[in-house]
Image (cartoon, rainbow, N blue to C red; front, side, top):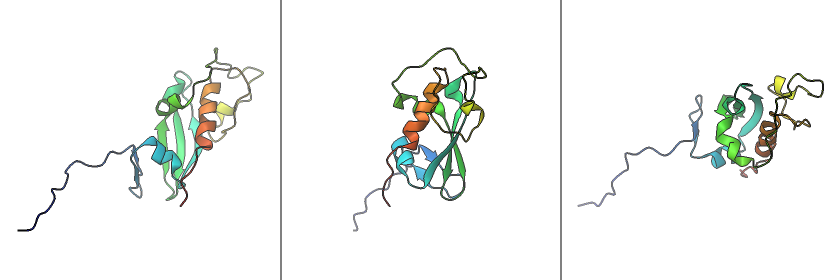
Length: 127
């Protein structure tokens, strides 16, 4: 009698799945380290910044959106108050979803801009 190992019926853990090509990433690190995934923007929710969306592009052409809340643990710096959006000192970066630069203003939005920098410079797997 052949000895066959039982197959697991439990599907693999999925952090994010591509809706077009069905590629998937088991965790955030695998997602960020994938050279086929590129950060392309941030869509803010000014009432609750961590409810905003980080926008990514997958190599197959699909756009992927992930809540900013899933990345806040990457940043341990200051979170400023108040929100200075629209003030004379504000460069308006948060009003352009494809603008990824660091914000020079001590504004509530600045910490999200710092998280964007961390993601932008995340080491990619070679391959």
